[in-house]
Image (cartoon, rainbow, N blue to C red; front, top):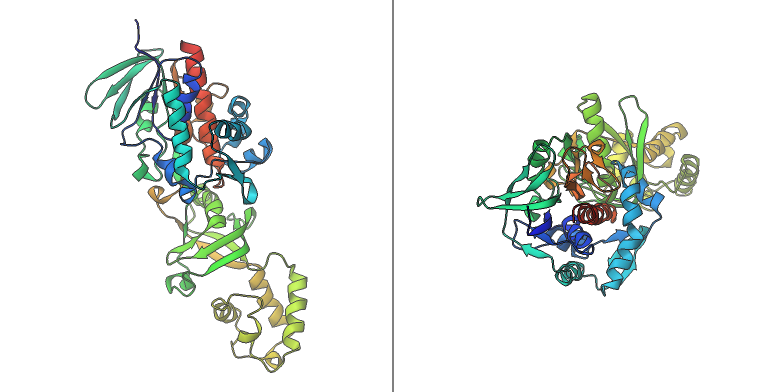
Length: 422
């Protein structure tokens, strides 16, 4: 049978756009389908509208920052890695700049420049594009994929199909989980879906009473513990107290471990410890603060603590330590002060969950990776079927890591779809 297209790519996000390019560069006849009006919607809003394209760390560093099955990416990275991404965009006339922690952004600070460069490359390669074209299901026979059926009933045959429709997070960009039923129909297993890179919720009294709502903290440390009190993970950086719990960069990074611990032990709560001053050891903090208040014996604790802690946090911390805000040095014992310092270094916050998957930045879970050939991204269940991007059970931290995974798996899938079936 003669097909009009060698490769059909379903989904116009970062992985789908790159899959189209990967296939087009191998001279395949490519059709890109997307149900939305515009391509690259998720890219357009990423990084606060600036688009954190990738991260400039070495491969091992990238893998470490993708705790959700990042090791699977060694093979796709051998085809197209973060350094290839940087060269790719710079060759398209989009120079990148490096910011904190290796994050790479366009020099223009405009996400649309990244999207436009991808669209320009697609046009140059002669990729056919159809937007506002939802796919209803994939076409299979016993051994292989045969094409797609649109919601209009139209069928389009092809030798290979790349499914790059995303997960279920940020649904207003079109990621509404369309690809999961297709994967199941093809014989694939899905690992449970869950929100990650998402704010966490808490029923602590001080949260419910909104005593710290809106308080932003910089350079603090947050640690997640399991039910036996063993540390799971720690992250240092910025966070914010909200009316429902906690948010901010280090909270988002801890969120997947909170979800997994809640699921693993079917527990109702997970303990986090907040270190307000991680740059100081316990002994140093005890010594410095004790000398400071001893040097000002007539001043209240509330005023003396201002060089060390945010104003709004001081009354709560003193209260939880059993100290009066107006107490002075003469009312203190060394033992009681050391207990207060322990609270600063390990302030317990019990959390009971996260916001829902549609409020998350990233979807955890997805198509089981044991059923995917890592070197090509082809299905082990159906020949000619490829998967790329967030539909796979791969999830990393914010900071360019998830987009790196999407672009790498997308390019790899598109390239091998073309090489194998043209």
